[in-house]
Amino acid sequence: MRVLVLHSHPVEESYGKALYKQTLESLREAGHEVDACDLYAENFDPVLSRHDRLAYHDYPGNTAPVKSYVERLKQAEALVLVTPIWNFGFPAILKGYFDRVWLPGVSFELVDGKVESRLRHIRKLAAVLTYGATPFRAFAAGNPPKKIVKRVLRAQINPLRPVTFLAHYDMNNCTPESRARFLEKVKTAMEQF
Image (cartoon, rainbow, N blue to C red; front, side, top):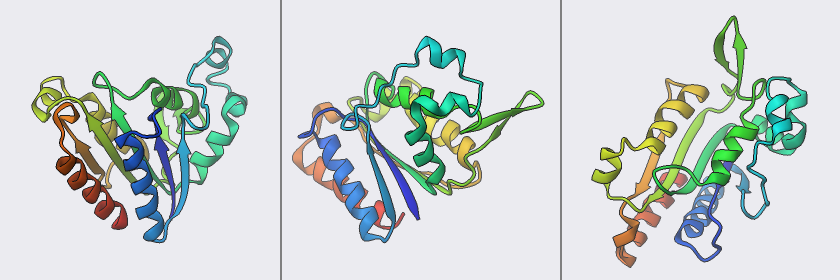
C-alpha cells in the first residue's frame, strides 16, 4: 500500500522527529511504499495567499501552486499524520497544508450544494500525536485534534473504517521510559498498519 506520511516538527533532534523516523521505518518493514512528507524539511509554504483564495474553487487551476502535493495526495492509499499538538491544534504548517492542498476538486467537490469526498482512494488513516497536556486537560478542552482526525478526516476519507489514533499525552512531564514505551507502541501499530 502507498502510504503518505505527513510530518510537521521543525526540530531535527526532537522526540517528534524520532516518532516520524520510527513510523517510516515500521511502515517500510511492513512492506508499504512510503511517501515521506516532512513539511518543514520541504519548506512547504502554509500561507493561503489572496490569489490562492480567489482561485480556491477554480479546479484544476487551484492546484497549480501546490501541484506536487496534490499529486502525492492523489496517489496515496493510506495517510498517517505524525505531529505535535500545540495549543490544542496542529502546527501552522500542517494546518496550512490542509488549507492549501485539500482543495475543491482534490479532497471534495460540491454537488448540488452537498460536499462529496474525492479521497475515497485512501483506505486507511492513522495519527501519531504528542500533547503537552494531560488526557484530562485535552478532554476538558474538547480535544480538537482528536476530533479532526477521528471525525473530520475520517469522514472525508471513509467514515466506515477505523482510525489508528496514538497519542502521548503530558509531554511536559514525560520520562525516558514513557517515551520509549510510546515509541514501541508506534512501532508495533505501524508494523500492523
